[in-house]
Image 1: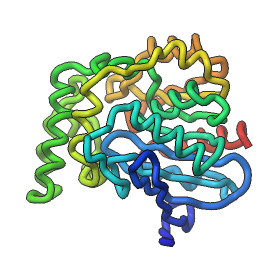
Image 2: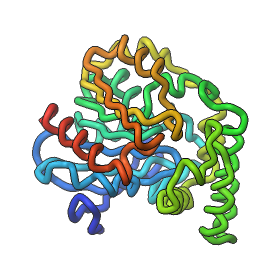
Image 3: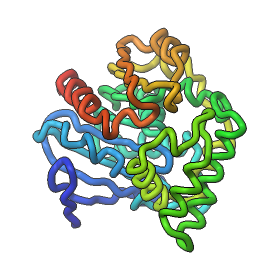
Image 4: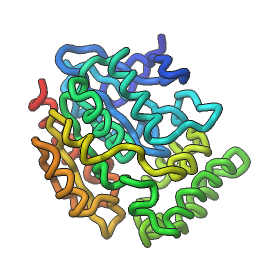
Length: 291
């Protein structure tokens, strides 16, 4: 057993064997509905350091590194499609947490929403940080050529990091564009440093795998099965948010209990400093809604 002094208090580091991959997570015991945190592509569980203190102290907490990320195992066959993460989390809920509230950012939020439609009894609430399923209805839906190149180039930066330093990675990645915005303009220097530090623990095959195929789900049908409340925090498109108003309205049409908060101060990272306090309040609201 390993204890980690993290935001959120002292948590126990645990490992669960899920579909042949060792998934590592931080755990804190408690009572009531567990809260599970799921990070985005390139990130790790530490992406939630700014907000995890917002979880009520008496609630069970699981903060997971997805396959191919952080401390978790890598897939020998580069099985990193969104469907692979969805199946991992379906089993993680069944074997580890039981029915839970999920706080997800980016890939983590997308995974949570899809799981909620496939196993409605296992997901009791979702706080989605800047994603709806329509954001990635196909791998190419919102990704233009420069953005695709930037995502794939990040994998090359990660591959080179063992032989280069982080400052080189910051300078190189800062010139890439996502949705027409250079990364050095979309991220603060501290955020980019943290982002690339987390990405250095990612299997470099992850980005290419996730862009290799469209989603196999009928999104409308999946959303129609969701029974839990979903709260979306949508960032500013001009600053890098990947959610359009159309995405949000389409989700609202199929999800019975859906509410949205617009966060104009940042783009995609609506959970991190300098807007973490507002997202922390969203976590507390969801915890109160699903005790």
